[in-house]
Image (cartoon, rainbow, N blue to C red):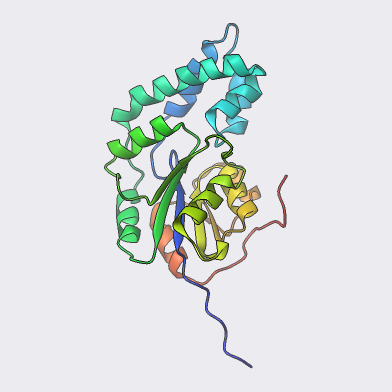
Length: 233
């Protein structure tokens, strides 16, 4: 028998921002509650449940879907962003986040990227507050024709911008099903779910982990198919 072919090395690791490498102490849920309250008669339990089911998608998309009114959703999104920006000074990194990011950044043949459901302004503010400016070769939020997760657009954009050789040499780490679906749709080599959200085991993934300290051993280890699907709707 011939020799086994080694897996090609990972060239790009894409991290979701809030909840994955940044602690969410309820800030996002409160921001959505306040955003919904800007629309008369909204913000009750049914609205909040609908938001929760859509978390991980771009803020404007979530609010437009829940409110059914694109004008009201845009106004509510401004309120959401204002609350998140006011909360940035209190934000902290997840355990091991800084060590893992800096360890990976030190590898000459590996790039880091961060994606977020937040606006560009909010994402940049959080990254700067945590001292991560310059760590990420690509920082991406939905914009223009680029859809956010669960669409694969941002992953493809990062791959194109950074001239990644193969989708199989990309890893994504996220705490929402939308992140994992995006990775699966893009066909990336490693789809890593982190945390204890109840929907994660049913989302497509190669690995489920409880902490960021598990990321590097997975990147350096042999690949496995895990719980992948041929397609996602």
